[in-house]
Amino acid sequence: MSKTDVQQSRRPSLRKLRIDVQEMRTELEAGFDSPREALAWFQRLTVRTRGEIPQRRYQQIAEEFPPTPGHDRGPFLEALLADHAAPDTAYDSQEVRRYFWAWSVLPAFHRALRQLRKDAGSYVGETKEAQDVSRMRYIAMRPAIDEIDRDQEGVLEAFLDGFDEPADVLNWGERLQLATHGEPVQPDLPGGFATRLYTEGVAADVLPETSNTAMLTRSDDTHTRAREWLAAKLLLPAFNRGVRDLAGRAGEEADTAGDEIGDAPSWEVGR
Image 1 (tube, helix red, strand yellow):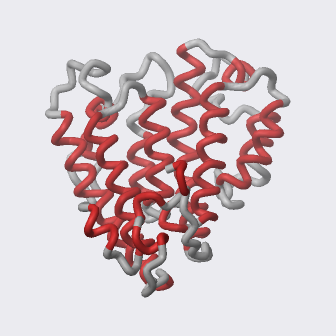
Image 2: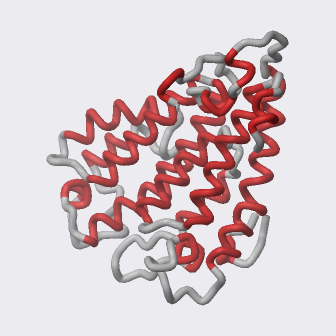
């Protein structure tokens, strides 16, 4: 996007959303250094597409993450990793990433833009906010959307890091409610996800030889991968549902940062 395009915008929230999404494509094409970095990218994608990525897509993505070291990473996840992180992938990684973008993200961006345009403000003056979209602080000029992005980022990072002790998951569970905008992580589960993590054994079928305490607190490869798998399987879809619900209610604000400025081959995770 040229500087002239930005300055001449009269519906800046739409162009700001395009800038936000464009940054995601740049990161995708560069690839990721680890599965954890890919998870963080998918979290940010949920917000910048305003929850319009199909839930089914997240189910397919979760299948790419191995629950334990004894399972291989899926070919799509391999293709997402930077070449030095997964040098032996059988596919052209760059083309797989671009295919995913064209097949999954562009349609989601289209739907997000159509939803946003309903209440996108139109600026007719010569205000700073209307002229310099690239310096605007909030995602699509929606402070509430920006806030849930920070909540999700913190919750995901804390879960992947693991906890010092099992009781820490209770405080984390309160933060999780904000990150999902009150959407349940497991819709068919009575009570909360954090409650079950603490009291039962949500990963028992994946790690039968260990306790939930070990899954939550240990940093070895086995338990790190289990947390990544659960994040892909449960947290990302809940984040997506929460953003989708919030996006219909978030009001526009032209605040600026000032000086701070389908069914395709399985490895393509098609729709």
